[in-house]
Image (cartoon, rainbow, N blue to C red; front, side, top):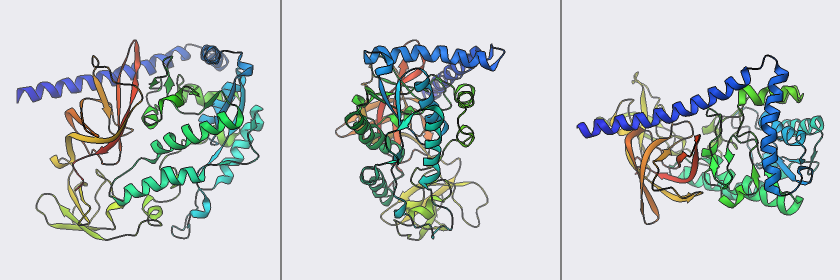
Length: 435
């Protein structure tokens, strides 16, 4: 018993220490820019800091920045727009490229009665930004990656949903489309030295993926499946900036179109869109199959569900007669049964799980403590790994709640003289809740 208490205290200490380090680094960065009394001085300081990054890129390319060709993946959002503006302003030869990954003809918007995501507004915003900052787009229309996206992202995600898993399509999109298909087109078709995106992440001198300075926006988790050679031809200009204190003011400084400068961050699954319920969208491709929701406590039927594919572990279970907070804790795919439990029940906790398809961007160091994130917004917690054939067993120092099959487990280790850890890679979780 005393051993478990000591382990729990050690885990808590390590997690809190890492979170404090990131928070302190973010606060110190903010304080450095708040010293300046005027917005103009603050912007100048940002430019001075960014020029060091631009010099690094120039040295990396081995020629003057005016001859370094960079294709910026643009979405019409503020992050990719500021990325393009910064690179153009600091002397690089910049062109924009907007991706079209989803064919709107595949949508049936009559099912939801809401507006499907459309390309036209985002394309208008991209063109407006390009005109505003003086860069050209590689074509007079978005570049289609519909087939690549369907085959490598959507079809694979759909297959996992049908098996009762909860996939993360954003990791697949980065692996197969943005940092593969788009990168290859940019280099082979448009003679680009680099592609740039608005991701909040960093690449160090050894081509290792590192967390962003802004810990609240770090997106290294979503880049964990990208093949390492892709990072040799990729730049993340926003990795050393803060979203609120730097990127938003820069959007104003560059006089980006108002609808772009003030646009809210995009959330949700990319192919579902902002205005549709996930279950409504998924029902276009997977038939609903009603089944029972069973109490993990006594085996009684406490509700009905529309199909296992439409639920995820840790999701709030909604059914009549239970006024306390109950959650989905287990799936029986073969018998089409969901199990639910109270919020504090042990069936939601796991301290050991397996992952498949593990990819290492950087091999872990035996001398350093390994950390893992089991979802984007969760903290990185201490763990140990053991390779067992094609699987990797992950053991946590303390159990976590709602570890979900199909999601990504992403590994990190401390980085010398930095609060931002190195992202080592990861794999797909196969937890114990799926039967």
